[in-house]
Length: 409
Image (cartoon, rainbow, N blue to C red):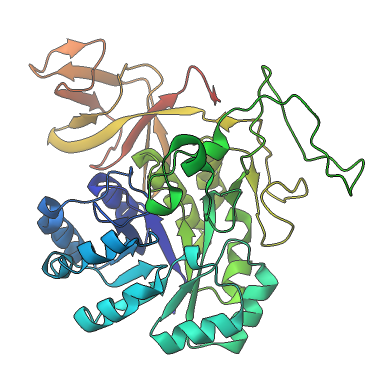
């Protein structure tokens, strides 16, 4: 069985992008019970669109029920059996074991996947979860590549999944109280304020008493530092090693990220998995999409702040973003004239287009048309517009341009 590429779907448009740009499966949250409460998620009204897309693509869909359930949450979900059953889910991702009897009773035909929030990182735990009915375990981010292989050898009948790209928490697999303490928003209830990524001012050096001379690595600009924030995970150079270790699924983080992020990151890992001859061209976008400095996390070393992390092409302090997402190419309504789903202001100069199997298209022969089909200097979000070009565009291609302010703190 080929290894699965699993992408985030924070809303319907991102689900379309994930499937179009190479994901084998996507994970999504309902309006409630998801650890990405602010991702947009999916409402009951979108069921038919999601069903049609799933049927058209034949791809898999996983539902995140991965918050830590309070009593009120457990009582609420008991009333939602019919609503949950109406969704075309292939599996449920859960961390609270109290959900197991409820899900097995009401949805016996659907798989159970253990969330990374459960922090499963050894074979004895995998065996226990298998015996409880789980077919897949999403490993804690602290698991090393060597341990993954040993776990798979010990329990070959359970699928293992791991995050391979995206943001990491400075906490044990996301079990963090910092957001609740400083912002009154619980990360364990899907409302994380990303407090670890705020800017903090230091007044004293950070040195542990028993380790004199060993300082916590700190970068500072403009008098502030992101001391509590980890680097971002990136395993694009190690896909074969992940597969050889026994993983069944490679997971991309980012249900709160943009459509552009979902598309280019999914596409890069698709090409790496397929060993596409142009995979290096697609990989470049990982360093231009919004991200922090990359790391290989705990797979080979000591974690997301380890300075020895091996990711080619190092990046700078803070967030880096070199491209601005402008919109999506729609249907071709006449020869060379395309509808545009405008997301940011579009001007004709410097436009680039990317597609699932096209690293980059650009050219000078681009004309913008307003809703009256008249030439215009710009297209603004909220208005109807068209692009006229001889470039071989297709519906679903993404429109971008170089950002005027590439470094985003």
